[in-house]
Length: 278
Image 1: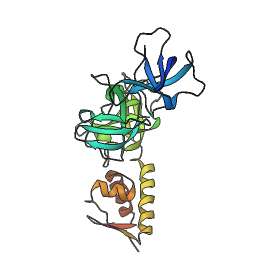
Image 2: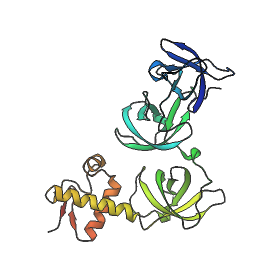
Image 3: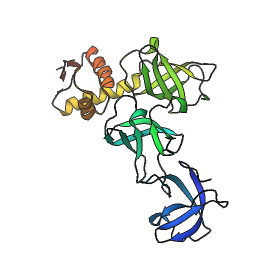
Image 4: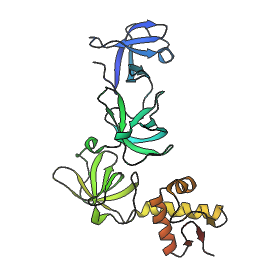
């Protein structure tokens, strides 16, 4: 069976002006086209070719020798290349971008920003992306109590805590009582495993309030301040887009790092401005 969203080896059944038509030895599906530009030069009928199967612009199965950044069931960070009223389109390394339906988004998505998504097949038999990844996460992690790991916040519930995709594979939760500081959906953080629950999910805590990332962000702020003559028109009430454009970090990351620099007496900060102290 020709499997949508997967890499598999198929046989060239016939050659045509538009490319090569592929199938398995025992044909259960219609032949799938490998476009002419991707057909190996020495290809002939009976040759085996390793391809990825996805949908073309008319939602027909089509083959490619290129490798996507994610295949069916995999999770990873993909960049938004366009947004529409019905969803967003993500760059996954193929000619046709991967569609993220509006109903599968959490919060709002912004062009040129990366998000953690999974790949699934929708009810219309199309490959799509989803930010609702909880059911795609595994519970067989190798981690034990006090292990240190990195993960991405994929959901935040103010009464429960922050749900984390550890290694972008395993399901974990930072309980509300352990969630100190300001964090946003999509933030990458360092965590410590408090315990492994009976169902395999990970109970997590922040490792020293993500001090490693905070150090990196603080150094970036100081560098930009020095480059800009000692001040920047960014502060506590600046919009997230402006902060990300100027400093390449989330607003929550900026607030944590700027707060630390302020407490250390390195900067002054107001609603819309930060400045190095003399």
